[in-house]
Image 1 (tube, helix red, strand yellow):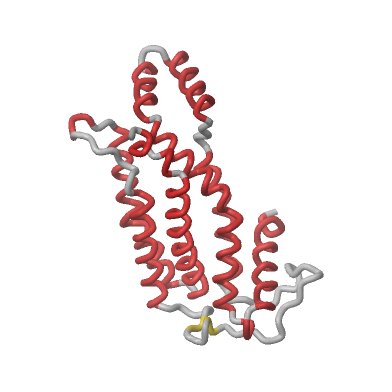
Image 2: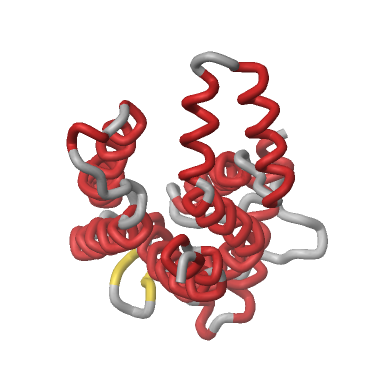
Length: 243
């Protein structure tokens, strides 16, 4: 099922793009495929960010309900559901977005991990594999080989993107006011901000640079998307809302 629903579409999309880019440059094809995938995921990312902003804005009301949950759990649960319905919040939007991107990433991984080769069994009947394939991305590096500079770019771009996306994860509170959830969010932010970029950078250093190029392009596009979406949804931001 994974092969049919995810691997084949991604593989054929890359082959189709390869037939149109100049010199069948696989580097340009990887960049274009990443842009196409990001474009199709944009509505889901927008929905997830909208939910994130709304949850942040509703945090004071939600905290009151959580306090009530200690003594009246059933009533608190009903109040929380009513609040979600009233504000049009889907608390599972972010989770769904992440879950959907996981098989897409693995499909891209399997397509890129061995470079790119003709796979007649996975190729659609109306798609033809290029007779000549240039594995040098932009004439600079072989995407089938490891590349340390690309890995460094991946690690740095992952950190910059994580820093932007996690800047509002933790509310500013006095230490004695911090709850278990606040401590958990702080820990999560540290993991996303420092540990994950290192893991991604090291992974890019030991894998074919095709994956590194995909990661780097994805990070750059992700940063641009985040800027666009946060500007578009700025009216939902707590600070904006309270003005």
